[in-house]
Image (cartoon, rainbow, N blue to C red; front, side, top):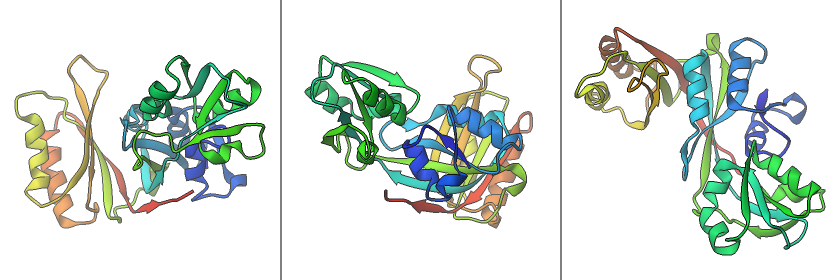
Length: 269
């Protein structure tokens, strides 16, 4: 099982809900995780795809479009950010860019003069704080356990309902059509007025709820997009099959990728 490291990231906490600690290995980016699973170097990976405050994790979405993998499970994890430092005298706050953004109001009000430094993960910021008393990190309160760090403040995120959505990815041959939710990627390879509306109508006509629609640049040319779509329906359902047949007709010059159907679990840690 691969996830974003080092030890103590929120990704690590999500991965622990589906694997034992001795089965978990770390990589430095969502792309590296998805690529390793697609290439057969790992049988599972856990990556973040969406945060309730900051929105989609675009690197993960782009990796799904570049590498063929299956999504086999969704994990929802409430995010509890704490400010961790060796003491209250520090002049820099280091954490993942998403965590810094999720705590923007608190940091602006309480530490307006502190330098904000984006690093690879929340755990990396905590690691820097343990090495340097002029740096504070943002992470789960449990990250202070067994260290010289103090929990300066807890629940510093801007929204109390802050949560991150992770998915478990597997090799493409493990894709399932069974589950309450499904994820798709559509590359129409065309552009004309009303295209997006035309792509959404097959789902609306069959009473399929869309939980997310995200466009990302295809990288082929300016103004050309790939669409990531999540629906509350299984690929096994007749209504989903019918909707996808319509979508494939619209994207006949491009492609439609079924990441799979899966169920969701909320993990409190």
